[in-house]
Figure 1: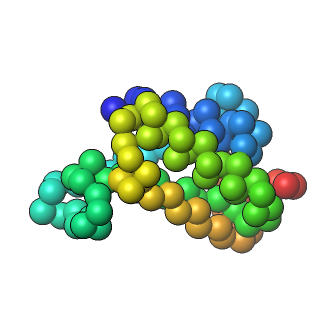
Figure 2: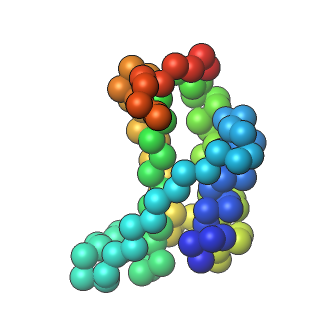
Length: 107
């Protein structure tokens, strides 16, 4: 499941945000049932996707990411929309650093 979910997320990010195909950074935090409480409308298969990105992308770009995430996760991982949550958290670009340097990027 993790590999398929990673492939789905990556394909959506590449298409919606124009990421390079070789840029993939995903982390998975599976939780024991007693540590994860989910809405009554969902099942134990409830999946939360949290995306951290720097600020500046348009609302439309974020919608272009969210829509196919729901479609592909539901189709490829046999989830209902009630079992999927997608959250995007934006932080200022100056709060990002990679390879020992502040991250510089134009969106």
